[in-house]
Length: 118
Image (cartoon, rainbow, N blue to C red; front, side):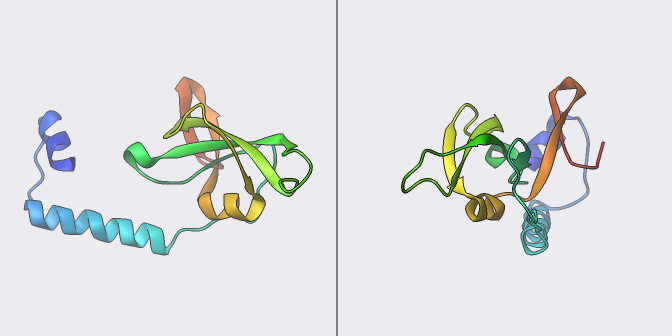
């Protein structure tokens, strides 16, 4: 995919397909190993799973908790960008924290950015 994208940009990277695959795999492993999770999941905030491509997703945590009963300890979220957009689900704060890599905010032009970056 990356090789095809470079070709579409009419650019050149002096690396073999095998080395490129190894480089991308190492980058993925480093990102997963060094992944941080938010200390706290807060209602009304948005969080990204930090993945690349089609697997990337942003969830907005609702200020309204799940209904009473067995789901009372669960938070409701809506997928507001990326994979699963439009879906609504629920999870515990711990489950959302494990899924999330960082908090994000929506910037001009519909661009999502890690909180604190531009």
